[in-house]
Image (cartoon, rainbow, N blue to C red):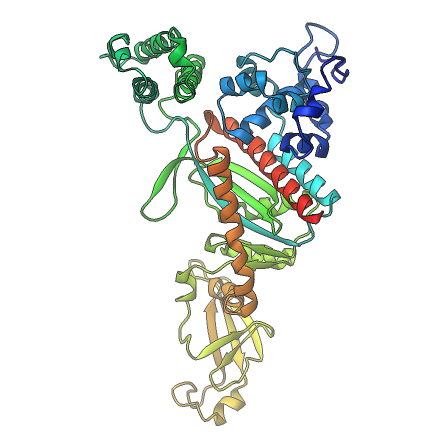
Length: 486
């Protein structure tokens, strides 16, 4: 039951926050910046409104997840820190003396309350709304890219994965007390996952029975990871590999097993849209969706910047239809081939016609091979035959007695011709320099917020991680931009 969720906490100790949580504290600033009531509005249908025990307020539960994304810690470490970190308690709208939740509540909240919420779009939309209200997004440019995240349950077998995590715990323990080697049980010899789970449980019990060792941060961190992994395996024992993860390629020579997050970001480095997919999906196929999602949040777009993955035919057509500049280099296979006599004819972008090496422009164009099944359609450009007859460069170009002079390109080549001209301009090169910004943002997501490895299994878990991580990163960027405006 979630009645009376917004009742103010009455505590004689609330004034402590004014002393120990300064005004420039990031969590205090986020609390002042964001009205989190939108979370309650979104999740209230997931709770009973008039029956049962009072639940932990959904806003507080969501804030726990947000703290996890900001500080990249395990559920148990997060709850432990919220016991004594006054900035955490302040952010969570708790009285200083109030008890914290049990870490298992976070798992249940993710699985039971956040299904079918569309949290990724909701949270990105909220941050963009705040940025627009604060007038810190003024550009009409978005930069697009995709970043990969390795699956938590990789291609190792369940036994191998559990072995790796228990080994990490033992290694951390041995750094402080090598005599502990005698206390751990013998390693399992069977291939049964349940046997390995039992071994991991024993490791946890033995370490926790030594409080002086268990409380050491380096040990505690690895121990909490092992406990979470054991819990996940107990819930679902079918993870030989993450069932939703797929093999994707970062380059011709390197691959990964996991997921992709396709991202659109404003020139001010605010993420305006994201789509989470399995790892094998093509980057360019999600440009249209990223643009649509960005526009839904209120972003105006006249320029889109991306790498060569976004220069496919459909996206070039989309750019024309939606009237934006697509700053994306063509694949070299397109620019280096597909036309005959390329050195003799150049495409004039403004006129939409080819020009011969003598400087004569085609006078009309028509599409040919319309009805020939199995053949590429071609765009044929017709030149003024009377000029060709007297052209000083006619030798080898104009055939005596010919009734017309034409130059044909396949439809594919014709559709890329304008882009080929555009990518050689100074304007294109200047705009393309901004692409580094999204590469830096991807690095921030991975290195600062743990987005390099999935924190749970499955596409839904990856979407939840993406939602809270991007929300946190956007809020931090908004605070930085507001500070620069002061």
